Length: 180
Image (tube, rainbow, N blue to C red; front, side):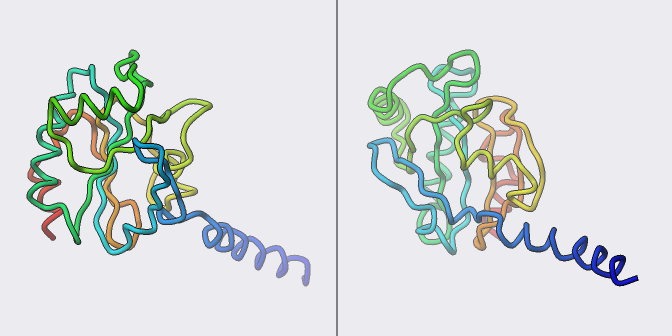
């Protein structure tokens, strides 16, 4: 009987311990597009939109909407973070310097851009492991479908929504989430 009780107790407690040990969005440090450390902990208290971006994609014009949203809402309450990735048909072939120049000259991007990473596969960046695995983010499993997939993180650092790439950044549901 003691073994059964112990087994039941462990069955209940071990998953709780595992969740408690899972990393938080704020536990990650990434590299910005200039190669500097960017601690996500500095974003505590802000809503965050994380987007994997590419310069040579049919969805690249979404940079314009992303920048417009950032100009209107960016600041103490909201931020956008772009992660260039070359995972889909080699649509982000440039170096960090080339990507930064393109984003600045073509779209006037002023929201934080990170260093180019991989968002899928064996070399997936740790932050994207967290974004795509329910066991880490506590919300849901997801698969990066294409460039410009959006992940919405609430002010407590919890993943709340995964937005498909074809949904424009200024979609009314996204704007409603930012404004709530």
